[in-house]
Amino acid sequence: MDETAALKKTPLHALHLSLGARMVPFAGYDMPVQYPLGVMKEHLQTRTSAGLFDVSHMGQVIIRAKSGKFEDAALALESIVPVDILGLPEARQRYGFFTNEDGGILDDLMITHIDDYLFVVVNAACKDADFAHLEKHMGDRCEIMPLEDRALVALQGPRAVSVLAELWADVAAMKFMDARHCRLHDVSCVVSRSGYSGEDGFEISIPGKYAEDIVNRLLEHPDVQPIGLGARDSLRLEAGLCLYGNDIDTTTSPIEAGLEWAIQKARRNAGARAGGFPGASRILAELQDGTTRRRVGLKPEGKAPVRDHAKLYADDQGKDEIGEVTSGGFGPSVEGPVAMGYVPPSHAAVGTRIYAEVRGRYLPVTVSALPFITPTYKR
Image 1 (cartoon, rainbow, N blue to C red):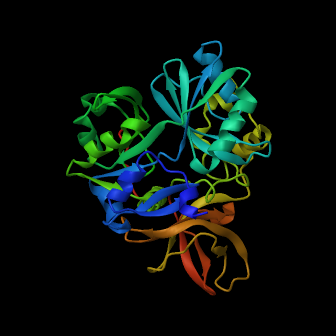
Image 2 (cartoon, rainbow, N blue to C red; image 1 turned 45 degrees about the horizontal axis):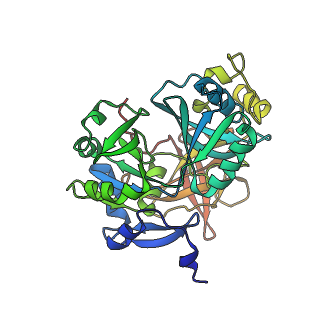
């Protein structure tokens, strides 16, 4: 069987081909990695103007309590995430993650409170397992409804708000992590002011059959260009954002990954609803006592990128291995290589010099504060 034929296609697949995209397999889908503009220019387009991404491969699911009460859905979800869902206001979004009994991360996700239900977006490669996980742990209390007929697009960059406001003026009043029902081009959509680039922007959930019409309308704007997976990765790396499967997975805890900010007071020791989620004993202990390793930013000296899986050493002879790079590449906005990886706390302070093994050589890298760019989220 032709490998491409076996891949799933998003509702925007034909549009990508018409725009000259170079397509690659990604999480079981045929996805655009770049367009004729090229990865470097697509990255800078998003930083300086507006870029449009197809992220329809992500999983979208509605969770509604069988009782009809939002509080029951929130408490059910709290049983599998270390996040304050009960305290999530209506029309607001929150970052979270599923954890396992060992305190590792099964997936990270975005959780939105809309009306009397939760709207959740999960990673493409994990979505089937995530839907099964939700059904197993919450199905007795909640309806778990995957949305198979929806597209999801991200409009990111400093001009994203002015572009989207031409279709829906109220978008300008939204703040970072706000979410709203709206009508775009006379189509009912869900819009959140969020994204994965470090820039101000929006994610838009659209009924699949209308997705191409709305995306074409956005692409007609002179400030907007289509952006592929290549630039999406370099943008999120500069923004210090984790990629599931690289920077976080079942072997990393949220505290090791530096994600403790996503665990609200209510779920911590002495909080109103402390613990009660998988891996709570480890995660709450690490919040109090620390961890044996931490995710850090890394800036290699020179122009040579340090890629994923490069080993990290305390010395330049390769005798004292201390960690590994989890994401690495060239940062077009910072005009140099950037990376993230895990090191022990003894080597995690900003300014610490360590060494990365690249083709048998030990190149100096400096531990750097994250993110590498200044985010432009509208607070």
